[in-house]
Image (cartoon, rainbow, N blue to C red; front, side, top):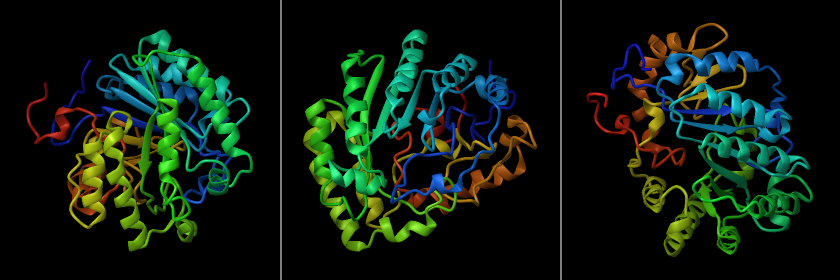
Length: 341
């Protein structure tokens, strides 16, 4: 099964980011997505139709299930299973969660079982922005740290093999935790799990954080502190996600140099909002390919609007982007356009 119009210059979908809901139980400094209270979303049947169509299923290799907070959906394991089953070429999938809900562990365990039963690798990241009260403060939820740790430790107790499950924590740098990110690193080292660090970005879509800039905005001093912290990661290279090479390139990007880390989303990925809007990523409202409530995925992917964005996204957005999304993902689309293997 292959795309009917496979052109490396245009690309084909290999990676999808799917927020399964925009509802959220947190009130984070760097994200106000929950404030949107957006309840409009495609039906599960419509999602299955999209992911089961050859224009997606024929080439898709990875799906990231995220939110909002995905464990707010009682049917999360069932939805994940349905979309994974739609894509015969899928190699792995991932899930992001804050792990704070009482039923978080049970729903995450259901997703872990989906991966096991289908022989797919699951990359699971739980948000952790600090240790103790600092995490509670950044997430805006009293008791968040204790609940998150309980979820993490319950997942670790499952003792699933690394070929089946990669568990890690992810921290977003803010001025509140910039001098305490080493605590998150130690937390991961002590529990023998992966760890990822993200530099915050303002965006008028997805995180809806324009009104919260003062909570996470980075002046030159904060940027320099983050760059210095990244120098401390090398002794722990084996558990750092993405690979350490990305964080070296990120240091250069934050110093004002052009990003060197390739991005699969330029020609090989898409971000599907719950309401059906399709984007390459969530950097800007300018990056809108189209809506699945109005067109088919194939029409959107090969439409003039997407092609215009593909031609300009590198210079306008990617060259200065600090995001680690799917860095290290291997694809022929990350090299110069050429024959498809």
